[in-house]
Image (cartoon, rainbow, N blue to C red; front, side):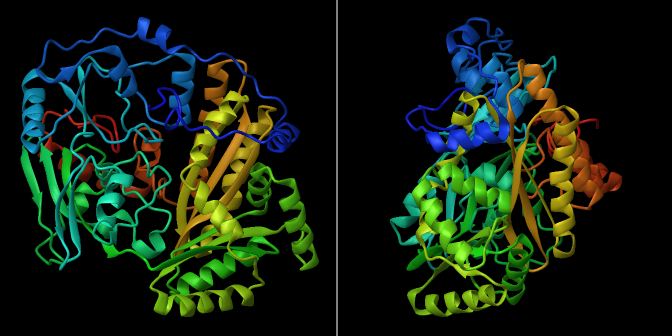
Amino acid sequence: MRRWNGWGDTSVDYPLPESALSFLIERLGQGATSDDAALESVLARFPESRLQTLAGVSTDPLPRLLHTHGQSLPDWIALRSGRIGPAPDGITYPKTYEQVREILSQAQRRGLQVIPFGGGTSVVGHINPAPQDAPVLTIDMTHMNQLVALDEISRLAIFEAGAKGPTIENRLSEHGYTLGHYPQSWEFSTLGGWVVTRSTGQQSYHYGRIEDLFAGGSLETPQGTLPLPNLPASAAGPDLKQLVLGSEGRLGVLTEAAVRIQPRPEREDFYGIFFRSWEQGLEAARSIAQARIAVSMIRLSDAEETLTTLALAGNPQLIGLASFLLHALGAGEEKCLMILGITSKRATWTEKKASAMEILRSHGGIATGTMIGKQWCKSRFRSPYLRNTLWEHGYALDTLESAVPWSAVAALRKALLGSLEGVFQSNVVPLLHFSHLSHVYPDGASIYVTYLYPRQQSPDETLALWRAAKDAASEAIVSHQGTISHQHGLGVDHLPYVQFEKSTLGIQALRTLSQSFDPLGIMNPGKGWTQSD
């Protein structure tokens, strides 16, 4: 069963070893713990639905609560404290394209606002209702999750947009294929959600980002159906698929998507590589990307993340042995860990590994085999559960991300970490923060920052620290000409900063586009770009 106020399934926990908890207490002190709001009490005072009877729509409090918030830290604070805020007035679960069309038609006639809902994993406020007078109807795509067609000759698969990551991979695996799109939310997020937020998978260097995989589909809009033909290429004007990518529910509901698939890899391994400094690792990552070595993933942690990762693993003997060996090889306190993925056919795997390792060694890389890589792979979708455990021990966690050209990576990383330090120092609150390169490209890389701090005595104080940190970090990003979002979309949290990237004229064009498909402004208002049309 899905957690109503945290991450993932209630049957899965991520316990903190005693040594890991001691590490956190040493760094951050004791966090403030308090009893979370009970589900029963939240439901007892849940706002009444403003919807009149509507066929196929649930107005019961529990399903509405489960569709009220995503997975951002502000969402967690709201849910854990019982301060729910605006809620959808009804939830509907279409099973056919025709039902989606009828829902949008009724929403227009009745003056309803509509929020498309995939897996509910947004960390920037995509699915949260905005305060408004009109009733809000959430369209949950859960039941539209089927494999519609498989074209093995063209290597195209068509899925309904509500299909989640495991469903997609299981169905493709039956035929020997993979999509290979693995965001950290893979177990719960949906194909439709990936497309409309321009999602990036952990192995996108090999498989491609979702815009590389998305070949076509169908969008139901308030003005009618927008078909997106599955064409390998076209010079017939602007590509309409690009309008849907990153549209965040503002134009309509994506009902199906055609995706480019590949045969399942014959061999895949993940290696742990240590560098004596982050600068060495950075140059090694850039060299591999610009040499276009066909690895599947390069993830480079800074020294603080490397230390924290090893500490939270909770195996002091293994950590001690690894530290001893690395010290003997000249890697000291500034050592940084790279996870390198190689995904290939057996015939080319050895050559790819040799080419990558040659570059890594030339930059001082110390290869340690696959033990660390296997551990990372084992926990790649389990680690988000750590947020639940940390919260219960009194710690709040959030992340920041951007992408810039290689020439700006080091400066932006320093500015991001420094912006957080300034906020928490001025508020006299301990901070643990670290970063990694999560994706690399020939011309640049993404920077992913994680930070933890003790929960404060009140939810308002905890939230105020988050807001100050978010604003300071966002200012650092735009001042270094970074994207305000590399892989999470815009939602609400990034909206104040999108104009720095899109420009006034660009925002105006997006508003005009929205009016073309949604003249009454019923689709997910206030998300992605402002609704002040």
